[in-house]
Length: 217
Image 1 (cartoon, rainbow, N blue to C red):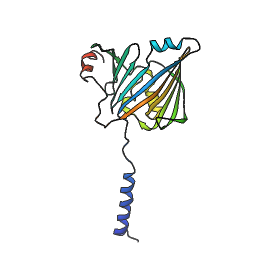
Image 2 (cartoon, rainbow, N blue to C red):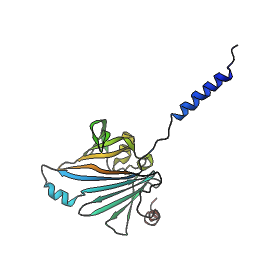
Image 3 (cartoon, rainbow, N blue to C red):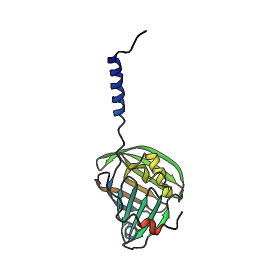
């Protein structure tokens, strides 16, 4: 009977360790990304659209939450807690917030496609996630290199954010196109700043959720 020598055992252990080292932990995007929004329409006046709707967006992500701010004629900010699966919405600098359950489906996805974008955005290679919804067609140009953490989308059924995250594997959105019946909203990332893992997305005290979502189950 053949025996395994000490050299053989050492070689097997070396292969095992090398194999384990190949499975590196996924690094998720934490930081801030800014977008510029424009509008197109064959029916409506695009200047009027731009005056009434957001022209700039600022998104902040950490490993569990995100904050999105839309600036235009008015400013609206949304604070999403991944652990609570709820969001606070704020108008302007108001100290009053509305608590919303983001576990509720607000739209339906009829079909989806994922394919190479054939272009780079901010120097990054992208895929296009195409979502055909009940009332609109959405195209997300998602980064292959930058991914947002699963906690920021997995339970987030509102606005089909969970579908976007699942189908794109959390690819950070660098460009988008929302085609509605009478107009199209386009957005493109203009600036991206990476931060360390201890970065906090919220610019409010997290205890604000306790105050305004207290009665929600």
